[in-house]
Image 1 (cartoon, rainbow, N blue to C red):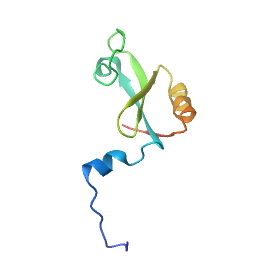
Image 2: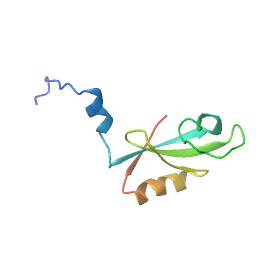
Image 3: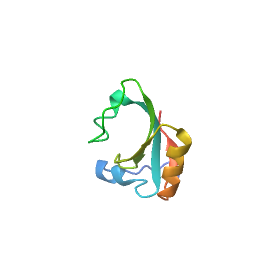
Length: 84
């Protein structure tokens, strides 16, 4: 492709970009985690945690420390990227 060409990507293709290679790391408040992590035990409201998600949005892990979340991504052979 040249500099001026574009490529159309379907939503299905977009959902798989980075799959098996990228993990999204994001600080979240416990109130927002129930919908992302099914079966999550009760956590005090307002608790800040670090969440790691696969490229397709699948939850991988939670941690109270950013360094631990990053280490979890690396342990799963994934490159962590920040999501704001």
